[in-house]
Length: 337
Image (cartoon, rainbow, N blue to C red; front, top):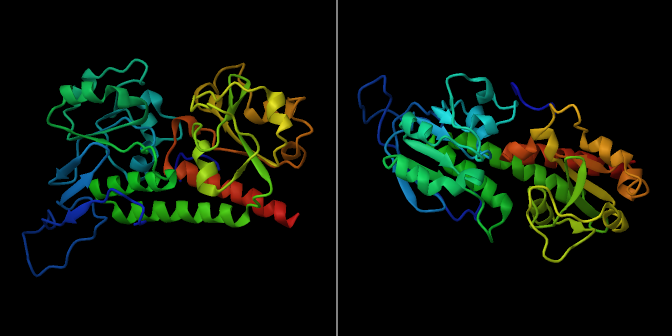
């Protein structure tokens, strides 16, 4: 994958109904011609999709696109979707749009220039995650655009929500086959973890930010939290009133160590946003240097698995698939040792 890291399930509540309404732009209409491929984004089509707020109909594949949800950046890039504007400042360097001077940068969610979205005159704005707070403002600025929001919904399986997002976007951009493949790859990676994981071995998820180690709550905490539920992991520690704070919960490293996890799963938040800082230290270095953690089984057995370095700003289905495969590799390797 260029510029990448080194490294229709029944549960889908929202599905798209597609009616092919046109034929090749290079030829006149011919009712005897075979239907065009569903993955041919150049084919005019009428497609109705549903997102978190309602339904929209696209009469053709949108060509003026604004992307603000960091879960979608890698997917849209892999599909060669041309962007008019995006939250480029929020993108990691692993995303090709980062170096595309033709994409107008509207900034991050901390100080966005929403007027640039209006200037792009978009047909669609893929909004969500950090930019959800600006939904109404954006809608007022571009009343003729369709704002598509596909954040994972509360109460729904996270795995299904990741697949729903790419499925809907696949329908919008004529990439149904590609979306299906992304879902299949994710399912296969998750299945590998479930098959290899021994539920008697307790797991712990942590977040490293600014040199500090934070606790990620099973089922609730940011990024790795949902993996506990979807993969059926046994938590080493559960805390009342845990949050989904992006820096993790402030629980002492000693408490984490006392829970004696066999596996530690790590998201290095600073790797995505602070790696250029001369004082930055990788999560692995911090964990290995921790006196409190040195006797923990996960550390002693080298059963510490790290999410891709750009995860905090690239929470795409591809990122989760990559991590799950890495976790499965480690689980399978531990069984063979």
